[in-house]
Image (cartoon, rainbow, N blue to C red):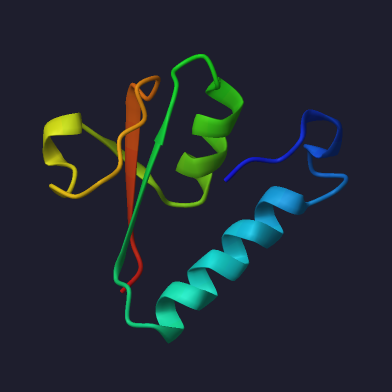
Length: 81
């Protein structure tokens, strides 16, 4: 998920709204786990995900079909149930 730089931050709440909608969709459709990839320079994003319950995990622990982007070097997991 990406939010344009000018619209990031608590003032707008876009990231929170997007994540909330994603989690609702997943729960309604029986999806139990969320995984994400990001880059280590986006420390604010990583802290945000961790505050929302995501836990960092090694790349080797990702699902076999996870679409890793070449730039991703930090991976996180959230259990929904």
